[in-house]
Structure formats: C-alpha cells, structure tokens
Image (cartoon, rainbow, N blue to C red; front, side, top):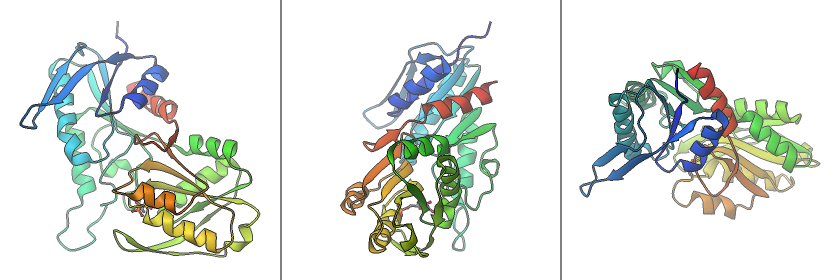
Amino acid sequence: MVSRPMVVSALRSDALADGVRAALDADAGRVALRRFPDDETYVRFEDDPAGRDVVVVSDLHHPDAKTVALALLCAAARDLGARRVGLVAPYMPYMRQDARFKPLEGVTSRYYGRLLSGAVDWLVTVDPHLHRHASMSEVLTIPHRVASAAAEVAAWVKAHVPDPFLVGPDAESAQWAERIAGLAGAPHVVLEKTRRGDRDVEITVPDLERWRARTPVLVDDIVSTGTTLIETLGHARRAGLRPAVVVVIHALFSGDAWQRLEAARPARLVTCNAVPHLTNAIDLSGTIAAAVREVLD
Ligand code: R5P
C-alpha cells in the first residue's frame, strides 16, 4: 500500500503548506532546519520520509540564501529513502533574466532551473514570468506543472470591485490581464512600458478617459521596486479614473516598495499568498494542490 504524501513546510511557508496539505488530504512532515553558528545548515527529518512522496513547500523569494538549505533538505529526503521528492515553489525566481540583454551576461533563469532540476524529482510553480521563455520546459528538465492564480484573482475581483476593468501595465502582463478579465466578465486594456533601469520606467497610456465609469484594477505578476505600478497609478489618477485597486500575484516588495506603493494611494492593494506578505488576501492553496495532485498521479 502506498502511504499518503507528506507535506513539508520549508523556509517560512507554514500557512501555504497547511492549505496545500489540507487540500491534498496529506500528512504534515516535520523537519528541523536551522543554522549552525557558522551559518551552515542543519537538517533533520522529525517524521520518517522513507517510501513516501515528499512535497516540500518553500518560499523562494530572496532565493540565494534559501536555495542551498532547500537543496540540502531535499537531498536528505532522498537519502532517507523518500519515494519521490517534489518542490512547490509558488514564486519561481530568476525568470526575468530570460535572455542575454548585454554581451557576456548569464541567462540565469536557465541555470537556476537546472539547479532545481538536479535537487528534486518534480516541481510545481504559480504563474512564472514567462516572457522570452515560451514555457517552463525551457528552464526545467524534470516533470512540472504551472498553476495559475487567474481564477482566484478573478473571483476576488468579482466579489470586491464594482464595475471593474482590468489594466495590465505592460505587454508581459497582458496574459494575466486578459485571462482574469475574461473570467471576471470585465473589459481590459494593456499599457506600454519602457524600462530604462531597475527603478526607471515610462508607461505609455492609451485613451484611459473612456473608462471613467468603471473601477480600474491594475494587475501584475510581480511587484518588485513598485515603480511599474506607481507609474500606472499616477496615469490612472491623471486620466480622472476612479481610485484604482491593485492586485499582484508575487509580492516581492524590494526595500521600501510597499510603503512607496501605498503612498501612491491605491483604493486597495492585495496580493496572492504565493509569497508570504501582510497584503496577502487571495489564497492559492487549492489551485496549487490540484497541480500537485496531477504531477503525483
Ligand atoms: C516585468 O515585466 C513584470 O511583469 C513586472 O511588471 C515587474 O517585475 C515589476 O517590477 P517593478 O515593481 O520593479 O516595477
């Protein structure tokens, strides 16, 4: 008889891991993961993973510090006889370095994908930043599933925003704006963005004035410095639109980005729980568990 999967929470992912475990009707696997005084990682399973499917749920925001600990945890699970070891990494890091933008640069999305592919048997992620990569198969060499936050975001918009219209700040966000708008039964527009540097972006806006009778919902896959959304909020305000609601899938919020974005006065700012943050209001554990079920079957 095959035992139930064991869901392990790694690197401050308890809330999401609990949701995924409950949706999968799986067991919780406890691990002790801590730092030795010299900053190396200590790993011990408190529940035996031998013969079991181990599902590690891990936040990979700020990945460099976390990846080694995660790889060691997964290596220990394999060494202790786990049947398969899979990783739920709702935020897939490095995906924006998806090309050689300057000569001799590294295409780190590929290298990072290969690194994770060596550490686990399968991977589930949520709405990765697929722009120049057509699919995750260009990044990962192991079985994987991509879960989408679109249905949950659309349901939230329908329940909380009167007369919404979806705004994607740039071409990359078109895929989410269009899909969420379709599911929410709302119109959408996509703006044009030119990025000149990490914190220097210009947004070109089509005729926004005609949407004054609706509530703008700015939707983006990632908020990092906040510059994209702050610029877009400014345009929406100058066009005389109603105060805009902001919905983001991956709440990275570098430095003081959250405070700066709040200072730009959105009507509401909410994020999905793909990355733990105080703005999390949209739960993705159901859609993630469905993807895990598929990969385990
Ligand atoms: C990039 O194309 C992404 O879709 C986001 O728009 C971008 O990562 C947001 O970055 P920031 O918050 O630094 O403007």
